[in-house]
Length: 282
Image (tube, rainbow, N blue to C red; front, side):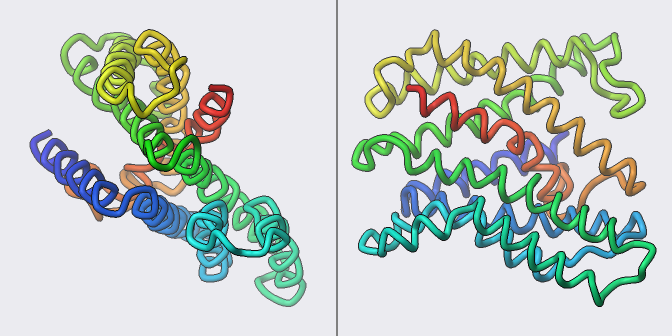
């Protein structure tokens, strides 16, 4: 627990320090790096399952898919036709074409279908989903850092559910939530995670009200945090399913007390697109 707390403090210090100095540009690079490292660990777990994904090319496409929405931020004078063509969806489609061509002459006949399916699923599940955080960074008024605050809100609410669930589960957890998938998770912990996320969401909305849409009041932020936190918990369970299939406790050992980068980013994967849709309505 001490290692986890220490790592959490260090990570938040690095994240806030990076975006405090570099703004949305720093946020884009952070998300891209996290996306690539998460996909790398995902492909490593596939190899433990006996599969053989196209990991190197997959990581290249993963970086491009995550970074693509930020092209106008770095190159505002870029031809509009280029920005329309180089989108996450188009890059994902191109990746499917490339991988489909590769399996015609690579991998053993008995696992070609699995290689194609799992390589592409990795791109969909990790970088394509996480690129919505990059899109969130671009929302609103740049001078007010609206997108940056919304991205921080999403990450804080998603990770807050983890922390709240852990603390509540340790204190009063009794009823198992998903004993086969993740034996330590309880319904009491889940409820505590939701409440903690709602409190975090309301606090951020109050503290940075000047940067946020007028409709995003603390009450609205608290209510919006509930489905985001719930999806964060589901994301964590999905990663647990993958880890169990790979017969591994953690996706890696990069972060003391937490595990791998996938163990850090898992709760953001399902929350990111829903958060983007929610913020777009505002």
